[in-house]
Length: 64
Image 1 (cartoon, rainbow, N blue to C red):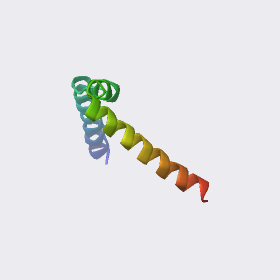
Image 2: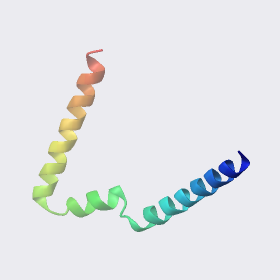
Image 3: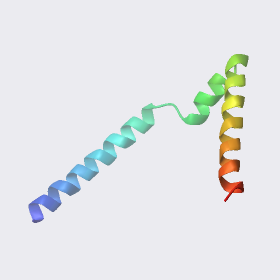
């Protein structure tokens, strides 16, 4: 029992270390949006996506 708990603890620590390593190398969401917003076609897509998301969240909350 204690060996399994120890191995599970090490596995959790390894997974956390891996997640921190990957998150440090991946671009942040805001950086991606800023890079896309520099070009007008992507600005229109971002606007359409924002409107779509807002409408669906509004409709879900407003009609309850």
